[in-house]
Length: 388
Image (cartoon, rainbow, N blue to C red; front, side, top):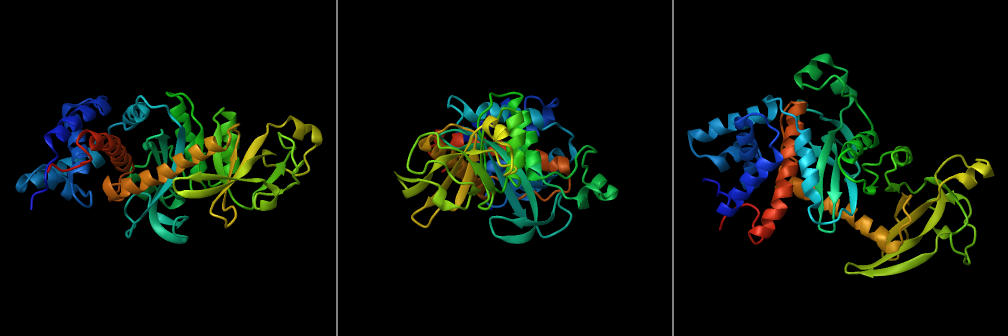
C-alpha cells in the first residue's frame, strides 16, 4: 500500500524550509535530495528506513532508485553539515526569547557491531549496560519547546584505535574519544561563536563530570545550571540573608537538613523545592580562608516531587530566584520530551549506516525535520505528516 503524501501545504513548506536550511549545498541535486530526505522523514509512517522513506516519495520500481539516491546523499556525498546546523540555531528561537541552552544524551540500542559508534555503555535511563549508539545533543530552548541544533557522537577506542575500522567508518583523523562533557563544551563553543550566550542546563547524563564542566563553562563566561550527584562535596558559606539557619555547615549535597524548604504549587501538583543555598565552587575543604572569601559564590538547589525528600541537586552560578530556576528545569524536561519525540516520530533511532559523516548528515536532517514539523503542526491544524 502506498504511503500517504504530505498535504500541499506541507509540501510547499518543506520546499521553502529545505531551500533555507540547505542553501549552502553547492549542487542542485544535493539540495533536491536534502528536500526529499526531509520530506521522507516527515511523511514515511513507522520506521524511517531508507526503503520506507523512498516508498513515501515514489511507487513501484522508482522507489528502489529513490532509495539508492537517498543512500548516496546521506552516506556517500561529502557535504558539510555545520552550516545547516547554524541555520537551525538561527530558526530555533525565531521571535521568541531563548530561555536556555540545554543538553541531553540520546542512547540508541543496536544489535550489530557495524553501525558507526556502537559500543557497550551504561544507560542512565534504564540503569543497565547496553550495546548502543550514544550521542550528546545541544538544544535551544524557548518557552515553547527545545529544538536540537548540534550533535556529537560518542566513540570509544574500539572505533578510533583500529585503523581499518576507522577508515571504513570514514572517521576524520582529528576525532578522538572524549567524555560527554568535553563534547558538550565543543558544541557550546560552536553555538556561542554565532549566537548570544544563554544559560546551559545539563542533567547528569550530559554532565558526566559536572565540576569539570562547570570550570570549563566559567572560563567561557557561560552561565550554567548543572545537575550534581547526591554525594558531591560542597563548601557552604554564610547565607545571603540572615535567618535561623545562619551559617550552613560544611557537608555534602545529600545533607538535606542543611537547606530551608519552601513549596510551590504547579499544574502538575505540589513541587517541593529547597531554597538556593550559597556555596563555594566545589574544591578542597581545607582551602585557606583568603581563597574562600575571594571565590565566586554559587547556589545549590535541590528538588523533589511530593514529600519524599530531595532527589535531584543542581549547582548554578546564576543569581536566580526559585521561579527562575524552575523555568530552567522545565526547559530541561522539555528537552527530554524532544529527545523522545525525535525517536518516536523523526528517525533518531533509525540510522543504520556505517559512516561517521553519514550519521552527522542523518542527525542534521532529523533535527531539521523536528524544527519544521513543529511549525507544520501549527500551520495545518496539528497534522504533522499526512493529508486527510
